Image (tube, rainbow, N blue to C red):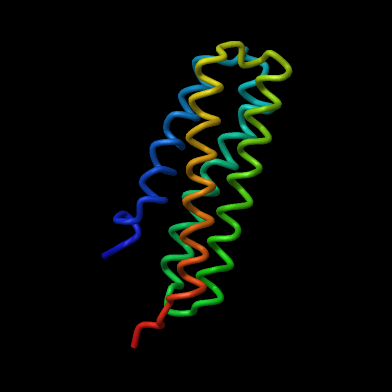
Length: 125
């Protein structure tokens, strides 16, 4: 098993691609380099922290720490998405609702995964 087998990584990978495309195709040009850049970075941070945490899974507290970073970045990404929608830079409500719902799902799954690691993690020997 590797990090690519984790459902949370798979969801974050697809969301990273979709948010990147959204910033290129659905935002005004000026937002591509402002809030658009911020949401791309925070989304990529989710995926990267899952990978880094998995790489440190031998050490339970490191694993949990990076998963918490991923969860925090998920919250940050939701905040950027809401800002884009509230300022009408992202005008397509259906795009906003779809991404928001998927980010909420990812956040919930990250939370459940963190709880599972806290309760059931055994260091590899």
